[in-house]
Amino acid sequence: MGLLSLNRVSLRYGDRVLLDAADLSVEAGDRMSLIGRNGCGKTTLLKIMAGAVLPDSGLVERARGLSVAYLPQEVPTGLRGSVYAVLAAGLGEAGRLAALRRENAAEAESETGGAGLGDSDVWAADVKILETADRLELDPSLDVSEASAGLRRRALLGAGLVSDPGLLLLDEPTNHLDIDSAVWLEKFLKGCGKTAVFVSHDRSFLRALSTRVAEVDRGKLISFDCGFDKFTARRDELLAAREREEAEFDKKLAREEAWLRQGVKARRTRNEGRVKELMRLRKIRASRVSRAGLAELRAQEFSESGQKVLEVKNLTVSYGGEPIVKNFSATVYRGDKIGIIGRNGAGKTTLLNAMLGRMKPDSGGVSAGSGVKVAYFDQLRAELDPNSTPFEFIGGGSEYVAVNGQRRHVAGYLQSFLFDPARMMTQIGSLSGGEKNRLMLAKIFSVPANLLVLDEPTNDLDIETIEILESALVSFPGTILIVSHDREFLNNIVSGAFCFCGNGEIAEIVGGYDEWEKFRARRAAESAEKPAERKIAAAQPKRRSKLSNREREELEKIPELIEALEAEAAEISEKLADSEFVVANASSIAEINARLERIRAEDERLMARWEELEALRAELGGK
Image 1 (cartoon, rainbow, N blue to C red):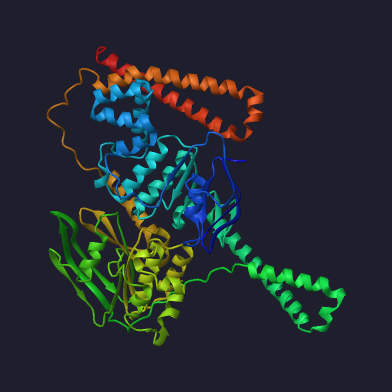
Image 2 (image 1 turned 135 degrees about the vertical axis):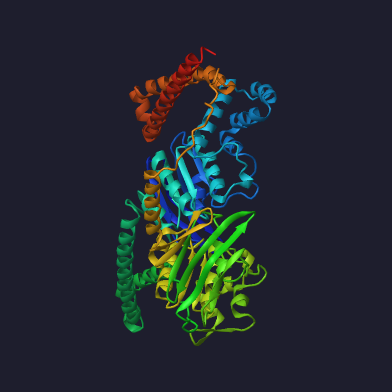
């Protein structure tokens, strides 16, 4: 057994079978991605691994002593306090006391003994928290309620990492992150050495990280020992082979059904076995779960616009006195597919609204060309009435909708966006994020337009639907403006991009995300070659006369921490030298060895820090 294994695990919710006798093993060092369509059970599978959900049947086995950290898909709405406090919550009572000590040292000291903890335990917790914040590039004092979505998710990741878990479970870790945050997370997870299982629909993220892939499909769990690119090829081969097998099975069943209809021969005793075999074939066919259909996405063009679609001249927009867009000029021509790229909060949606005349700029202006007809996809889904139903939203009081010159029944049109009859009549407020996105796409694709404006259209969509949306947009003959944090989506669709550089500057580039990265690298290299002149301060900085209170406290506590680490290392080494212990704990030896390596690394770090502080104290005259 590896770190964690599932043996014939099954789970159903009502009539829906999420897992059917699923098997899976997670080995130390794996970075495994879970793939599957929206609603197939990926999040539930993660919760089963975390122990938060129990299966109906089957066995979930974890290596002895395995600690698991689970990062849910959504940031809790009530998340408050400092980054330090969020990280401290991952260390239980010691973390709580470490956080309390920063606010009220006397109260923390009085509670420490009562909690059965020593002062060194609280100090060790403090060191781990600050260390983790540093690794995640987080300011411990930052109020998470005022932080961006990316920083809040990073803080929650830190709460899981601070306890040094053996297994990370991450549900859509890049959801609603901007591109820079997603790239940072990729690099961090690659470098931290943790075993991880994650759900994601971000293909760039999957390609960069996956060492194994597991797909949830119609209740079955199929594991592939390869990265994401090889998985797609092998999965397609597997599906084609399965379709051929099912076609041959159906032919055989049809022949046997035809034989049975002959009647007389089938009633003879010597043919009873053949009748029984037919009954068995019927049961197999009845139990087959067909692969769900694909969404049928196709945008309809209103009529050809003029050559110039939008002309932007010296556009300036500010917020709170800070420039969001400054003196931006550009021309969007018919057929252009333009991406809008920038960090969360940079002003991408503001730029869209200004270009569409939905808000008044500080200065400058935008003029639309002749015959421009806009269809707008809003990332906030402001048009959706939570008390309405998808049928009502699309039909607008009618049972029919005109699509590409054809009169289609609303139910049939919604089915092409993967809404079954029950979901068509469900209140929109009860729909999942992916269903709401598909509904918004159904709406704008039912409206004739020659300018599509899409603000984060891939949020909450599964990979297959994203790829179908890509194809629909690539083949759309009109003009498109897209805000997206999906790198591959941008690379596959856009011909150019408006990129936020900071301080209101927007660069216009040819190409997609990859070209933007090259542009930034060139600009950074140019800045390094021509550094800005720096004024030399007239007065030299005041020389320190002694260690800070925190440095003195750290210097006093480090020897205790080193002693505790070395004692634990000696205990583990002694156990590993015992052959009986190794045989009895064979399944967890890899994790024990990993723990020993982490202890040694931490011991080396503390020794280096101790020497650094001692040298500094000597330099300051022993103070």
